[in-house]
Length: 150
Image 1 (cartoon, rainbow, N blue to C red):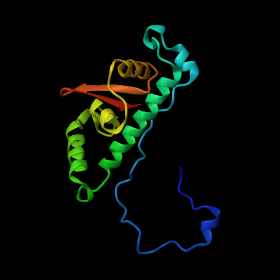
Image 2 (image 1 turned 90 degrees about the vertical axis):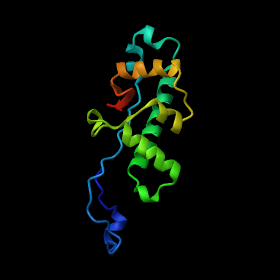
Image 3 (image 1 turned 180 degrees about the horizontal axis):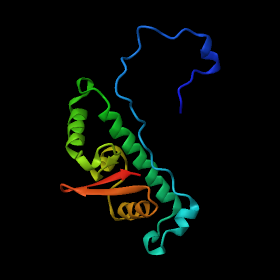
C-alpha cells in the first residue's frame, strides 16, 4: 500500500504549509484474516460444536472492528479526547505490558465496549477456533487475558 499519487493528481502542486512534521512511522492496525472454508472444515468437530462458518467470520469481523476502534483511540492526542474516551485510553495504557509491546491486542472488556458481542461461552468457543487456525494468540498475565492478532 504505497502512497503514490494517482494519475490525475500528478500534475497538481503538493499543498505546502499543511504538512505534518515527520513523526513516528504509524504502522497500520493489523486485522485478523477471515477463516477459509477449508480451514473451518479442518477444525476438529469437538471445537466446532454447533458453530457455523459464517458465525466464526462474523466474530472475526467484530473483533477487527474492536481492534480498529481501540487503536484509533490510542493514536489520538490526549488533549482532544472527551473524559470517557480519556478513561478508556488510560485503561488501554494500563493493559500494556512488556509482552504486548508492538502487538495489536484486545481484552474482553474491549469486545463488550466496541461491539454488540457478549463474551459468553459461544464467544470463547470461537476464540478457541481462532487460536487453532492461528488467527489470535493469548497473552496471559497480570489478571488479564489479552488476545493478540497474529
